[in-house]
Image (cartoon, rainbow, N blue to C red; front, side, top):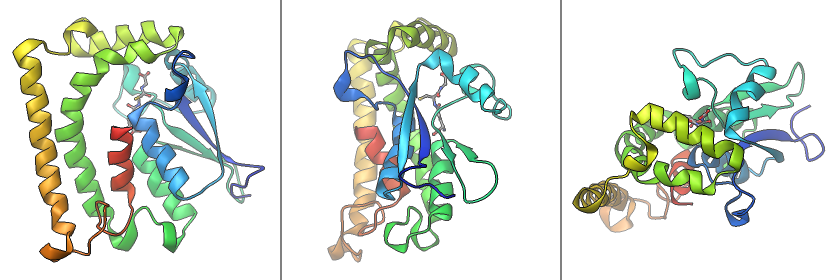
Length: 229
Ligand SMILES: N[C@@H](CCC(=O)N[C@@H](CS)C(=O)NCC(=O)O)C(=O)O
């Protein structure tokens, strides 16, 4: 059967330290899927796992490495498992794919994540966000992540991310003047985003509203919200 309160969708998310209870769900990637599920008011339960358990857990579920990916990029969260009305449960991986899947599988004109054929424009927004804002944000934030992780994840994250950046994690975040410059470049990207979003304003010919699509919430807002949380 399709997801119900007694047979909900399962969302796999990444555990954080028990000492940071207020930040239980913390990963911007898994938050995109979580916000999408919440917006659509779908019944779901979360299974939190540590970083070192992601690949083994996904392999146990029958998943293979993502095409062309190796190491920590081959098996990633979020994934969801949807019970589906007939046949085996459907496993969907990647936050954007999850948003598209739940929108198509649980259509609700009042709560659409991709309203009015906006798939391509939202994909463009997502690409812009990932390649401009997120790219800077990650340099600022990744070195701080181990401080909120559970002990099993801490060591794994430190090693895999140091290897990915080719230097010890504590050296990834620039210092002094270079750090100021990085913050300035992030501010400049936000200024671009802000000026683009202002075209939604009624005085500028838009429909008004506080969302990327003006008066309609969409997956693009999940992306921004996940970043700010
Ligand atoms: N584009 C993917 C990115 C997912 C991703 O990179 N997830 C990271 C956590 S933030 C992960 O699970 N990494 C696995 C690992 O480090 O072993 C999405 O949006 O779902």
